[in-house]
Structures are given as C-alpha cells and as structure tokens.
Image (cartoon, rainbow, N blue to C red):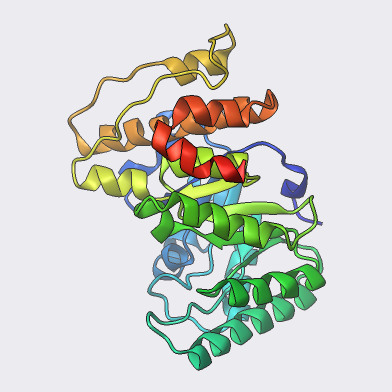
Amino acid sequence: MPKKNIINEKKIIFFPSISMDKKTWVWKNKIDTDGLLVSYDVLFSNKKIFESKKPLGARLGYKNYIIIDSGAFGHSQETNPLVVYQMQKKAQADIAILLDKIPPKNADQKKIDEAITITLNNAKMIQQINNNELNLMAVIQGNTIATQSKCAKAYTKMGYKIIGIPMSTLSKYRRYTQGIEKVLNIKKLFPSHTIFHALGCGSRTMIAILSVMGVTFFDSSAYYKAAMYGEAIKPISMCSIGKAGSKPECKYCLKKQRVPKSYAAKVNYNVREILKEIQRSRCAKEMNVGKEYLEMRLKKNLFKKILKYL
C-alpha cells in the first residue's frame, strides 16, 4: 500500500513546483504547504544529490506529500515509462505522475493519435507493475474534446483515481471559460470520488474558479519564476465568506504583506499570496459558498461569463 493514502484527501491543496535553487525552497522559510511537486528532470540531472536510501522528502527536509512528475514536459528526453517509474519509486513519491506523450505543437491528427496511444499504453503498463505501491496520477492529453475524452474514458476503465489536467497555457493567458469547459468535459467522465489536479495552474483567479468546479489539487512554478523577473504578485486580502472570524486561517488569509525587494524574499511573498487563495477556496468549499465567493472575488463581467457554469 502507498505510504500515505492521499486518495482520501478532501481539501484543496497547492503543490509548489521546486527548482534546484535552494532559495526557492519555501518550506525552509517556515512556509507550510501540504505538498511539493518535484520535477523528474531535477532528479535526473542531480542523481548524486538524490541517490539515497532515504525517501526524497527526508533528503529535502520536507514532511508532507511529495509528487514527482514524469519529465514529459521537461528536458530529460526519457521515453521509457519504466525508467521514470523506477526513479519515482526509489524516491518514495507519494504520487507518481505517469510518463505521457505530449503531441507536438501544430501536430496533425495522426501525430496526436500516436501520442494518445503512447500515453495510454504507458498508463496500462505502469498500473500492471505498480501493485498499489505508489499513488499514480494519469494525465489527460489531447487538444480537442474528442481526444481528451478518449484519454478520460480509457483511464476510467483502468480505474485511475487521480487525474492530471494540463492547465498551464490556459492559466497563463487567463482563459477562464476555456479552463472551465475543459475541466467539466473531463470531470463528467469519471466517478465522483476522483481527485483532479490542475497541472501548472498558477493563476489565483483560475484556482478560485476551478476549486468551485471540483478541482482540489493545484501546482505551479509561477511564484518563483515571477520572482526571477523581480515581480511580486498583487496582494489580495479578503475573506471567502464575507466576514472574518478569529480562526488562525482567517488571520493568515487576511494578513497583509509588505512587498520585499530581494529575489528570495519575493519567492516567499509570492507563494504566501497563492496560499491565501488556497485558504479562501478551502473555506468557501467547507462553508458551501463557492458561488458566493466567486461573486465577491471576481470582476462583474467575468462573473457573468462563468455564471452559466455554476
């Protein structure tokens, strides 16, 4: 059995995606996150650092959930799903993202179909050898509803319980309605207990919206990449239910930060602002006031656009 049963996790979680720059390791600065996403590329390019009998979390000094991605979106050029899985297993990941095949940009239908076939074959292979040792996440691929549905239906038959939905482009360019439609079209093809993870979702507004749509896991590297360019995320201090209580999470959510000057301080500042959104979304979910929260949180014209999905 997996060492941590994340399948029963119900709350909304943000997984910072780390680089090898230790200045971006927010948990070293007493910033508590429920999970951490580590790139397979990071492991692949730093084998001497990470080769150890200890779990990766122990090596990093991190105690909560560890997700290790497949490297499909990175630079490892690894095409063997078994090699990726074995490294994820050795690192004792709490969740292992399966190696998928991303269709090239502007690919024709034949190339897209080939990528989907490889992705599904990988998922079937790793599931057969896993023997319930790691929690596995299968990623939806395809640039059309039809191809995404093909992936989703296959994963449903295989019994996958954690599903990754790539959202980085839609999040980056703030394509909110497209993000909603993508998630809802996929979500309806899975059982209600399925966990959905918005991969590469760094937009707080998108996080708030998709949380109401039933997505519970989010990850992004945007917070430290923004800091690299000297950018600090615009602060938002509000309560998701319209009135602040005396709970510690309320004080955290409403706390205002001074914008720092240094790169390292901006990294910490940015991730705290994202975590505030996670906390507000959690409260809205727990209080069953998701729609009300979005009405407060979003600009009127955006709220009107998404109202039909609520």
